[in-house]
Image (cartoon, rainbow, N blue to C red):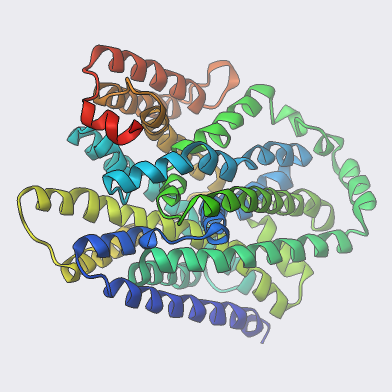
Length: 490
């Protein structure tokens, strides 16, 4: 009976998500031609308002790492990890403030529907496009793997059903509604999921503080367990200063290189929507990160002895809330996971169908109908989702590190070609190619051999190497042609 009470709210929530997907498909099917279908299916007809834009960016960025993995590390390391997590607060401000307006203007000029469209228009080099599409597929699959595992473990811990049952329910739900509904369904569900996440985080934090007897008593208990839990560096100096510096790069300014968030800059309606998105998004991401990481850190005083960090938030939720309300509020972390996966699935599908197939079909004069594009988009989304689902059948541990690996790889590839392509006229295809190859190569090599220069995360030297390669290539290669300069600087 308890399991039924937990599952019922989740079941009703999933029905709502499917309903939105069907509505999104009907809107996309009304597109008059192939170009209209692509713009509708992959960026929702550039119609996002400020609130939807903010929620779309934040729910895409916050994920299993933010709701399960990160708070799980905070459970082990204490308040120092909360301080580290708050580096992510400027995500929406940086994404929309640095890229938003110029990105949107340029995208409309060159009719860019994806981040890869932008790179093609800026650098006019097919190898750049191929490398970008390949990087999206490789690193998105790694990140989606972490999300699938997180969703299944969450379901397993809350309901008591086997991991495989949770994986099937979660995997089928997110793949089907993304495949059917497209971008419009994704951002609407992201908005709903963002509201669920805020409510859930408040409810779980209040339950923790109440069960612990108030903040003062919780802090005293944490000090008794280990005084280092109250320090910035954590037990055993687990959070050294070079690692803090690394986070300013990895989840700080380098988020400008994440295609899943920059893609949202293509879909908002106007400047007012962008400005509202900056304000709302900055507040919401700060609020979510603070509350959920507090749940992890403070939860150790209330529910001690959890050995696996990734199980901290689900276990705390089940212990402190009634079965029905646990089912209601566990939808918060589940929403965070689903909203990240759906955005990655839609961009992965775009990389295959829009950036590769449709582009080369158009170059050869092949007319592709909206119906065929719809079928191919649905198939691509479903196949990518199925591959990740199969990989998640044998899950590794420590989701937060899998997610950070995917973050670092995407930033090493996309950061400089995206940012300098917008703001530096001398940037060219040679620089972009060298930067993408050198940055990703250095990141892979240092990750495989576990090389840390000065104790920093591998992304720090990788970003530096990518910058040197970009500058060298841009000065050695040809200057961009006048047509490109006019399109980007008018």
